[in-house]
Image (cartoon, rainbow, N blue to C red; front, top):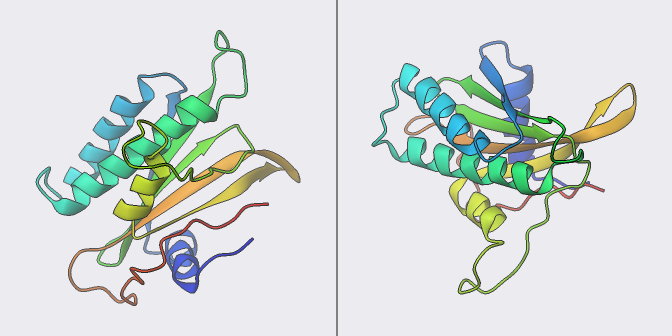
Length: 177
């Protein structure tokens, strides 16, 4: 497993700091999950003073849409007639960093497919790499067994921040073995 120092710093700020605001929802793994995730995040960002016109709002909603779409398309482990859930969490350290976490039941890590831009489909993780300041993935475990995965996307707070500026040349996911 590899990661950048910056990704580790952002993850640590959102997971371990005490001044982090967290909220989450569970979504049914269906085509309705994407619009539901957008409504949830739009309301959460609005409650924190971000408007629909803010660049950060656009980036967060776009990245969340891609990650939830990936979970709907690739994260299902049960038959279509059986209910299955996707998790969506928002963690905010005001003035510093915001992160979204999408979880599903598939243990398979996300894989960025390299295709020409003219080819339709398969561009989601490329878009996530472009729009998020950093992103990473890791297996989700319960009682020592892998039960799915989580994909984090990080966004540095606009304006002044106590965190180091992002390394714009290194926006690759953590490799999960």
